[in-house]
Length: 509
Image 1 (tube, helix red, strand yellow):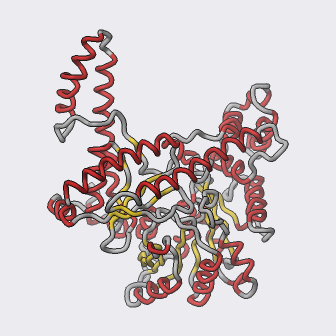
Image 2 (image 1 turned 135 degrees about the horizontal axis):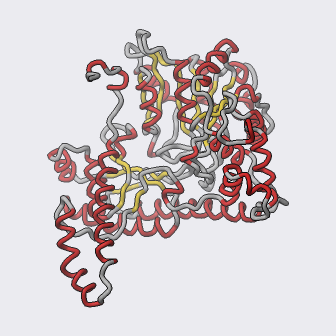
Image 3 (image 1 turned 45 degrees about the horizontal axis):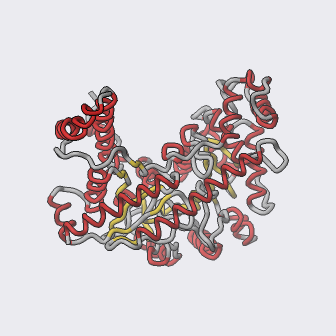
């Protein structure tokens, strides 16, 4: 048997996910609730139903739950994932129709789908060997789709040219990040390579870095200024790495995850000058670029800002920009389609990048199709455009309303505060917990925010992710909540949160 001491130390250094314990408990609660509902369904007599509600159900709950109490809710609200479809957001009709026709090509020749849907499916299938989604594709991705992505980037960035040879499609943007890190990080080097990462930061990215042998060097986003990225923090973080590691890159997330901030052009220019001065690689995670709804916020890519700054920076700063079909209004998380655009890399290094992506054969074909549909959605005049516009506008208006509601409700509760959510899919409220609550958490061997999230799950049926997973500033407590859910779900979530939090603060005051 493979012994633990034989496991890679880099893998052993990867942090245990706190939410996994909460998710496991949530699965048990759902099963408990399901069993109660199943027993109710078997009862047809009104009197018997009354007996069930008043006597049997409490007894069942006592048997099924470790807490030995009846749950005051009938279902769970799970907002710990950034998965829109899981949260109840309906998939875009155009995307679903095109994918259906690609999987079942007989639909292309029928009149059951709009003509632009059938034409698009036919075009995509022509790019597949044998006209089938089950075929392998080129390493970079299906050439016509790579070209479509290149045109999308050029339009997005105000005409800045994008070479299709610099684009690689992968099974999600994190896969691309891993491959770029493999080029930057030498696991056997001493000192080890370091990557400057935001705090708070999306944990999967940190796990990828640590798993490859890199050191994550945190720089703090300024919560009091809307999670602003300040270049002086980058300088402080770089100085803190002396004697610990050799920094090779800066990782930025824009729009932010979990913090929900959107960077300004001024901030981005400062970051670009900093990485140029310190000869660092710039890793730009821009997967939530479609989700910007702050009143005075707009998404601008690092590629565009770099181009606008002109030579010598635009010719020398090395940049990897990541995007995905999983995020934004499309939300096709399970299809696993992402891409990276590489800027200003040495041709010799690009050859190694190609070898790394070649080792994975190719990205899932349906994920590649989703990227094509993201990069080139229906246009005015197309039969599918009116419905597509209606659906995307509905999702956007829901996000705007949800972001506003979270901000207003959370900031109206004692011991909770939240910065405005300008973009992305998450709110990241801060918990100001009473000393007694912190003491109780320590007695139970839990992080204070894990303790809070556990109680929220057990008593209100709301599953969120504890902030400690995102490496926040020491001494601060948060939780992350996905806002990409239907409006009625958000209203019920906030109602439950308000009731629970009020009781929790009273208990520990």
